[in-house]
Image 1 (cartoon, rainbow, N blue to C red):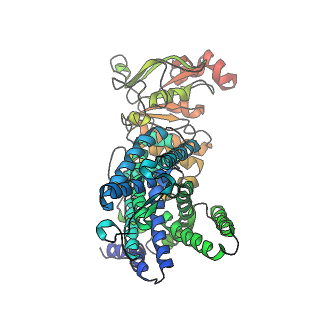
Image 2: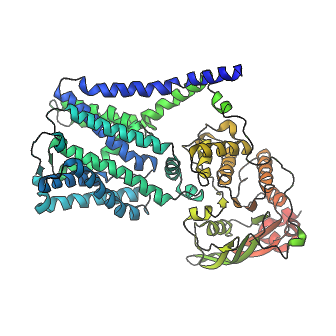
Image 3: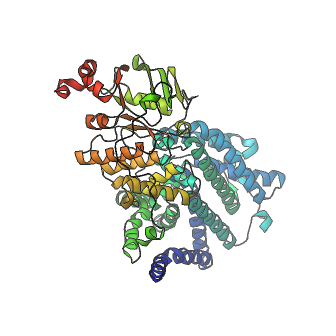
Length: 609
């Protein structure tokens, strides 16, 4: 008992910096607005808080979800114009107009975002730019409503109900409140199930879908939250300057500034955009003040140079760079390894039984209904028949192997089963239910069908523990439960010692294990393994075979694609052979190894020898 008390005290002391540092920082931010007596520096502080709020809002969709929007200025302008027009034409308080503008911006975001999310990479970014430009043109030429380029002037009528103040300090605290609120929202999201989903789809959308992540829904929710705060920022901007026009609130430079702040501070981190605002906003303002009068445009050259240097030498942002030495420093402190110990003994997720996989009872072969059934599957790509009239079934607890030359259609069959492709014809059943063409893939995952990928798809910028937690979240909702299940799974696959290592730092063999752990964490009844031992050395292959045997002995049905004959012949109860998209053989491993058609098409005479 005494030893336990000492351990907990040490661990508590280790995390005191994590508790007190935010409190000290909060106190500093609360005092900061009243420190300067110069209106110039008061305005600078307001702009830091303002840009920090907007950059953190953009970071929810651009940093967390990885959807690079360059059209956020449209939602900012919608918020500004809505509240301003409601105030000028109907006398509605800007406090109410703020939420009206935010609501309208969210509705527009849903209408525009849902179809645009079908686009990927730079195509999505270009679509958002086009949308923002359309909105700017509408505001410019709809003079009857917006006054066009003349703009809208808000009368100076001080009063809290009018969102207009004589001094700058009230604006500073409102901007600070918004910034603290978006930090709290970002922190809550990042450490929730939803946050794990956003980061996973940013890293690899297909892998996230295979683990049960509803990627379109997650992206849309992230966009809605992001737009909500951006539009609120538009109202604040209008009430602070008391003037808006299309060129100021729908400016493309505004949309570019937000990603820059997040990238420099730390894209996808909670406080990275805030750090970026505290660095770049004063730099921009002060450079314009110091250099603007000396040589027009020189401030832009210096500012651009700073950005280029920051991107080259701090690719993960300021926060990412600091974490490279801050986190290792914490781990070297006394008690740093107690966090795992204090969780208690890890109970295994699966039995470690690695004996030979249990064979199906031969007496039941005729009466036992199959767990999975595929009938006459056909899939064409243009004029090429990738899969042609392929039928097979898998019984519960069985290990079915699938072999054939490259391009034979093996992975295509996996994609047809898991919802990444739809068959041209044929039928797929799982547990007696038809799932033919069930899409998107997360729906297949929720039916208790899991898969790995031929080219492993780890979430590189997440730890091994976080990778597996994404899959665990498909069955549990609370982060604590997902963390416990993921810890057990890492212990089972032999990666518990790498729980805090980024997936990008793992060896190929460990990434193969991680791929298995992610799929297993979704609790599949049927698990599809696509070349899980490809590229490994003999010792690593033996380790993966051991894990697969242990998986099978838990009653999980396995469907395996493999080119390593030792693995496929050792593990499989039956083997199917594909050639040019057609099934040319199906039998036991022994019979397959002697089948002349298989030898001619795939194994070769060397294997027979």
